[in-house]
Length: 390
Image 1 (tube, rainbow, N blue to C red):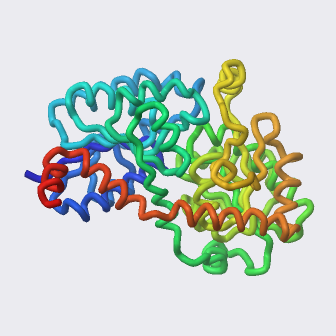
Image 2: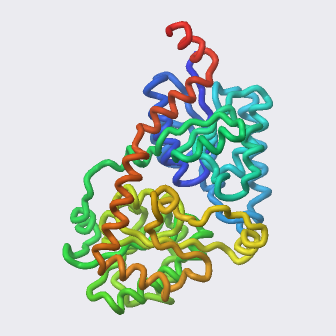
Image 3: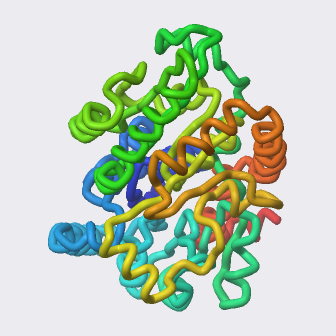
């Protein structure tokens, strides 16, 4: 009987990871069936959709509250279905606040459970590691410093590298990307990525647009490319531009975030997985991180963040080289000069790019294949066959 894998991805970055994992598992188990909560890439990879990632793409603490009833209903529905179907392995992809309670219940019901992408327990809400220990048989880690943390807490974890590092190995194609957006070859260009979720845009679209306007006053013939993750977010972007940067040479495009980064000399973006994509595409960057006031109050009051830096490049590099700005610092007067420095100072760009190359080499491990091998080891009949063959 073909193996069956149930997967739940939580947002666009999880969709990318899930698609790569599905293809790697299918290469190992050609007849396997995949189904669960998907994005378009997972569906293209052959995963049947029970629900879409849009239901889980919620940012922050205060922002999630109105969504709680629908999220709880979806989680109950998924638990009931998977408990009856009994797939050979359940794989939660990111979305820890949604997936970990579901994983715990499925594991208690006797299912094998893996989780792809370690929650940032080493950075904030460290007590979650106890929940993880009860919820998963295997934690798949994308970053090299994570398994040591889990080993200290008795959780089986494996470092697999990052699928994006394997995916983004193609040559840098700046001129082709610029031609796509009708940007003159010699013109300075900034990619502006205020996030792929409504909560991010609500916090970052306006200050990012204002920073673009600040920069355009000081850099002749500047172009700005802003990729919009989905059509429903376009009104927020249009309003921010109309209010703060109506005279900037904008190229507002649907999707194409990677092409926007490829076209750019410098990138201004929200903290998150996109910063890793930017690193792997070898583009200098400035990072902003801003959440709703209530969420920020909770984070500060309870000291929830345990790391000095918030952006992945600074967490992964041997020394922090990316300017990052948090909450009240996210404004034109701080973001603009940081972007200008990267545009005008080759030494600042080169310092970032040297660190980016080292990180990319460390993360490039054929991650999806490593993850597929580790997950295969959880499945009793596969593991037993491997022992006999060995």
